[in-house]
Image (tube, rainbow, N blue to C red; front, side, top):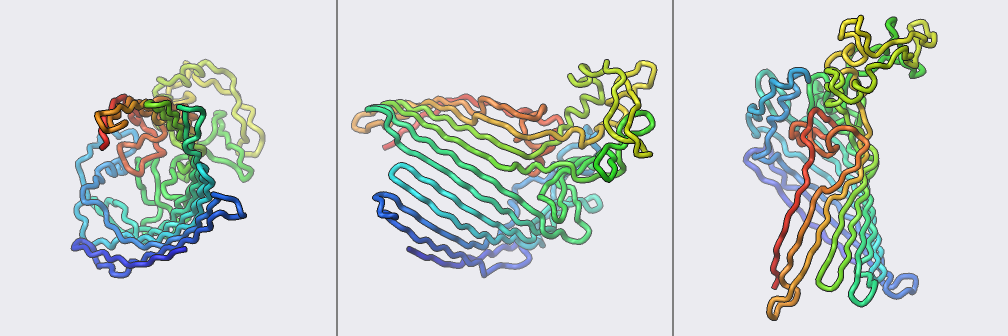
Length: 417
């Protein structure tokens, strides 16, 4: 068993105050050959750490300028305005607790870890007047757990061996407190659809337009036979996944090794604004396939509570174009209608490595051919769910003509001695 403890301090000429009390402590206990079984070992551990940090001076906040525009005016955005200054801010303070264990038996290993990270006085950008300012605005708590299983160096024959690893990761980031006057602040997006900082919600939930519903959750249908769009905005999506599972596979034969890395992300949502705009202009496959639908009856109730029985034509040439199925709600339609599942399976990397002897150095020269982001299967119809909105660090979950992800092909040469 063992224990360690210490203290750090943070001194900065740009922070409001210095912090001389940043304790950290850790402890572990190991049990060897437990249950009387040879080579079954158990290690249990726990740590506590306090940190103080400031934003990186090179970090850009220009992408926050989109929050001043409606989506229809996105063409006016130009990333030139930056945060005026970094001084007179308190440090972002973090308290982190971790606990877990590791169980091993020869080449087998099973690990589990739970963590809780409480962040106070976190810094966010805001526009006040014509200035882009940084302010300490909120506290939030990041919690989750990470579980992994690995099996290394399994011999399948004299020259064949393989290693396998799988990890399971899940987390939540909940906003505990927001400074008065800033609850509901936009973090990324536009004025009519954005990710927000809202007390009691996950950090970065998506706020947008929605349909009217009655107390039972049924859609309210207007006199023309279409669902009614409600006034205002509400939370319509949460980009946080339920979990992420990652796999690493390695197969070696003599001087060659083949490695495969892939992952499965389950849960989370994304707003597909690209689909909304293409529908509005009649340029999407959906509007093309469905424009000839006639006498369609939307499920819902009218203002009197009666079941809707009014048939509609998605596109009627005798009506103005603004009355068709996709134009009647405006440029972005109804945002909740474009919330999609962000599940995906992605093959991140495939690589083939050969190692050669160089003189007295055995297997010293390595040549690796690799492909990154080779395949992606996704539930959403838009761009890669991992692509950021306007390069905003916290813009994930918004797809508004995001650039597609790209594949990388390459070769790497290394020499070890």
